[in-house]
Length: 251
Length: 312
Ligand SMILES: Nc1ncnc2c1ncn2[C@@H]1O[C@H](COP(=O)(O)OP(=O)(O)OP(=O)(O)O)[C@@H](O)[C@H]1O
Ligand SMILES: [Mg+2]
Image (cartoon, rainbow over all chains, first blue to last red; front, side, top):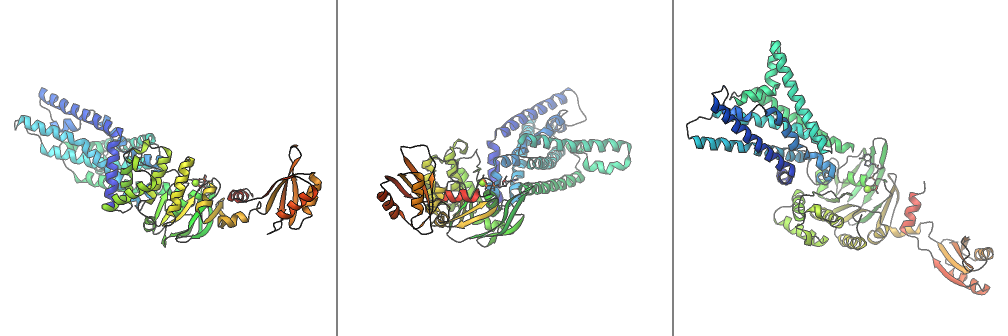
């Protein structure tokens, strides 16, 4: 545990010392601010079916930036160490490979959570300004954060796997993006099939990520996606561990 | 301290380490030599638990490096060949991190980091970013990292690689100083360094051990040991015959060279243990051949190294 904590602290520090992290953070804050003010504008014009929370978290351009976020966060994790050879000094210290892997993974998770925090502040400020004149749907807020968190866990795991597979950060990013896109497309495919074939419906409720994010953001919490993403995350992390061991053993 | 048995490592299509067996006792300082690609780094990587072996076993301080890896690694201070470091950290931060990672806590971190910075001369640059260090200082930082948790065994892969002569000297005297406290396995291509700091030398070639002895014994076993060089003004053939007529001389050959004011060099191979230098001096005086050099060849480790590693 202590070793894990030391590794995690180090990873977090490297994270916030890397320029990529700050660029991502800045761009993401800009995007979220844009989504937020845009949704306020929309709601001012005429009443909508969807709440301000939905408009903010899942704007029309959501799928244009969301899949790119993860490769940018995770591409550095293992690829850089493999390139610099620092994995050799790291893994010849008395630490276990899974400790190193989890420390890196959780540093990415923490960074991801930090990314979403400003939005919470936006809502806080809005509530304070309006002081009870408008109700922010609490359920939708919780649902949005929950689904963004658990899909985030899964996508960060996919990104980590990609980073463990190569020593080139660019390739790690492209590969990570491909994994995420593939998973997304499988979801879309199943969703389409489900419209024609009833027997696909139960699978859809598990794997269709687009549907998950939209329903959670409207405040509908469902345990099936949670089970799906949590077990998926565990599986991908185990795979990442195997890849790290295997690459070391092979080289 | 190190027990290696039948250690073998095969990469796809090539055997890097081939059935290696040796032991290193507590307190020994062993030079681990071999030409490029001999398998030195691969062996060290297996000893430090970074690479698994294809076959064989290795123990460090009684712990199996494969099945009981963490405990074995605690006993080892390892400096990898490429000296990998985190470029974005400061020197002192890096050492603090490494010390904590190796199990030191609280005051012990500070004390030991201070100690190794003194030892390796890093005090002046402790606030610098690692990326801005010169090669020599990176090398020292790698060494400081290997030392920070007071390991019983040091495994150093070419620690003086790329240093200037002054720094090589400093590192060498540092290693000599460390040898009183640690068992050391050191690989290097600088053979004079080995002769100065190591009491024992293992030479490997193509993954196999070709020699394992003290530097002195190895030098003595060299082909160029037991040779004299003689230079005098004399006709080549006549002098060769005369030299071979002396007791204790197995063979004499004139070294072909351009006309050099009449001076001629001879290589003289001696019988084991013979030393006919006095007789040769008498001979030249008797024949009236001016003599300007009479030298017993000191075989060096380099001679042995070249002989062993170029045999096939
Ligand atoms: N990861 C790897 N994959 C394939 N072959 C490898 C790998 N690492 C080393 N080798 C091969 O194993 C052999 C031994 O390499 P090693 O690095 O142990 O040599 P070395 O004695 O340290 O040489 P040097 O003096 O150049 O450092 C070489 O032929 C090398 O090409
Ligand atoms: Mg090497």
